[in-house]
Length: 399
Image: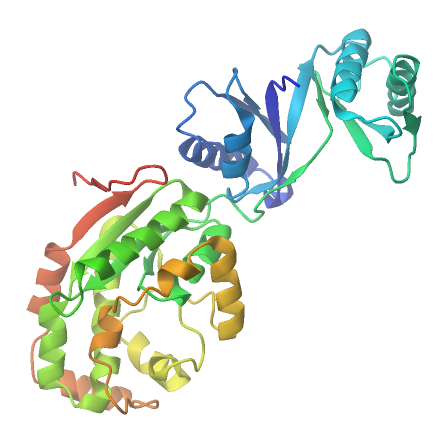
């Protein structure tokens, strides 16, 4: 069957009012990014639907990529015909002739969006169904549980015929809810947090803390691979790789061992906030899950959060580890996350980190040395890489 269009149905976008166009435009931009390997495609949209004209492109890899785009409720391969009954009947027969097997059942589900069309919905169903029955063999009508549900959308500009829906990712288009930076480690949790934030429409830039020679190039590559996995849902991701060795070594020398992790996280948050401000972000996203490790108790988060007034988004805060692992497997990040290359959060982990740090103590331990020049230098020396979903080679940014 030579399908010529893909019909895209919106998810939560349909509930938006006067600003719906902004969400639709963002969704279209995201789809174009994800499908940039197919330059022949032609896009159009209105308040209710988006259409991709295939222009002879193979639809199978396109359908696979669309499954991951947030903001899409469902999509279908479609045959476009003129907004005329005879053209619709002939198109429906062509489509059904390709689809059915002897003994199959079918029904017609018409939607008359164009109220000027001369037939009512039930009349359209009857006209098309009769035409198919008169021109096929061993095919019967079943309006309750048909093998084939042929849907006909009659619109002002054309009619669209579809037989099968594909489930979309739902949520809101990435970027429609503003920008935030994701503190991306090499573990299981933070990529899942990034995925969930993207699903709520957040444009995510990732920040990773790199501490050579304690962390290897393989650990760096691992994080780039995780960011690349996330581009399936956003089109591309800007990754900020922060040189963190000098700050970590200073913390090791200056801060008592039990407070090492607290101070490390405080410095990370300060740097992430600086990068967020430079990039025009509105929040910071972390992969924290309450009580999972010493730095994720309520007391720890209170002491760590003190360094910024920027909103901290924690999508996983109430999730069990098993739930997080399940999502990681579903989105394809799990196997990369468990590769045995340590990040800077694990290399200096104290034997007995405090689970109930006092803010006053953390501030006092850090007060004996001015960390600000070290933070300034780390931000200044941060490497920025733009990760594309289809290219194995990273593209260094020019700014």
